Image 1 (cartoon, rainbow, N blue to C red):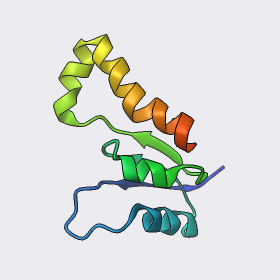
Image 2 (image 1 turned 135 degrees about the vertical axis):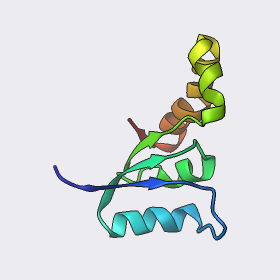
Image 3 (image 1 turned 60 degrees about the horizontal axis):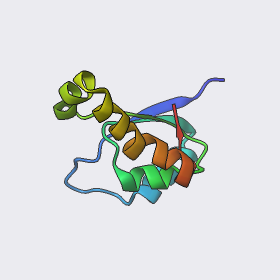
Image 4 (image 1 turned 180 degrees about the horizontal axis):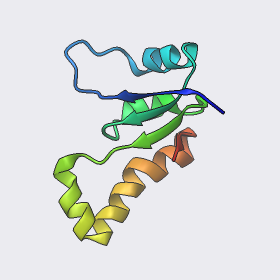
Length: 92
């Protein structure tokens, strides 16, 4: 099916509450979003929203995650698995 997607960065001078952003996405037919970082409040707001989520790894963590499987597992556990199981986030 066709749909709209957007990028969501959390570094901003005038942030909106994550629940408002998720509502705006849903109201505008956006069904996929890429988060530039695994921001917990954004991920919680996306829980059970029907919006598919892609989570970016911050650049400063790429080297350690790429070179250390335990660091990668820990990052996924903290930033992906937890939000899938506890908040119903559809992380792809």
